[in-house]
Amino acid sequence: MYKCVAFTFAQQQIFYMKACDSRYSQCLYFASSALSRKVEKLATECWAPVGLSPSHGYLLMIAIEEPGVQPSFLVEQLQLTPSTITRLIEKLEEKKLVVRTTEGKITNVYPTPKGKDMLPALKACGQDFHERYAAQLGDRESSTLVSSICQMTDKLKV
Amino acid sequence: MYKCVAFTFAQQQIFYMKACDSRYSQCLYFASSALSRKVEKLATECWAPVGLSPSHGYLLMIAIEEPGVQPSFLVEQLQLTPSTITRLIEKLEEKKLVVRTTEGKITNVYPTPKGKDMLPALKACGQDFHERYAAQLGDRESSTLVSSICQMTDKLKV
DNA sequence: TCCCAATGTTTGTATGTACAAATGCGTAGC
DNA sequence: GCTACGCATTTGTACATACAAACATTGGGA
Image (cartoon, rainbow over all chains, first blue to last red; front, top):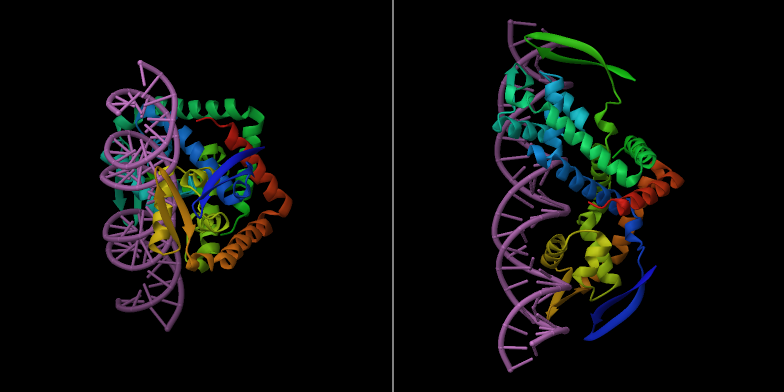
């Protein structure tokens, strides 16, 4: 597929036909970030009903299902850095959805009653997200994609 | 694969075995963002020799190869939003690598001589990035991954 | 016993990206 | 020729995330 492209060079408008499937979109850098931005957007939409971003939502779900969970565990589960996890917890604490207790060097995160009450709604958001992307990408295709992405992510030592 | 997990609940340390391959990493949200963060990191390393982030580097390459290129074209190529493209150009302008000229509602981006001189170094960074990820992921596997990611990105209407 | 290294968490700061609104220009219709 | 709409770009602002350094705690070796 080709399309018309125009730009000016030395005061002259230049038109030419260009391959749509440009070389840049074929690079893993653009491919992976474009995908993740689109997915992020879809997820954000799905989590909007509970007024949380997807990361906050998932973190809260884990905290409800495993009361007393530690930041280090969340780091593994959500695949984010410790500082990001701290920031996420801070925000949930501001919203009175979790509380943090620190003894020695260990911190535990517990859901508040208000947080616990949200579990069904949170699950619904996660479900909705999964259904939406599976519907668009195809059931089999999307799960194949997810597993090959995971595999590749594991292989990448940065 | 299982591993030992511990947390405290009601003053008691709880230990239990947990599947490593947690349910959360199997979600497209975490999968795609984890991949893109790792890839971003690798790319950033590869582009460090020229002192630019990957996006800036690619944008400059396009500007060199297509002098007078317009922001709207860059939006398509780099799959970023117009405002982000403006910000990227601004930064390259600060570094005296490109100049912007505006006539009417159209803006053109031209490389400066200083910018043009960087072309070989820029290409080397791109090459290095590609080689590094292909070496780690496998030649065939990585290109398969890229094309299925692109395909899925296109399918996703957010 | 004391110090030092390792570990878990937090803080200060920076970056990349986006959305929404503003701007500035071109154009179609009356 | 004026007006209203539409497009390309920029600006103000916000958010998610990360890195590096700081901090606090624990455990092991001289």
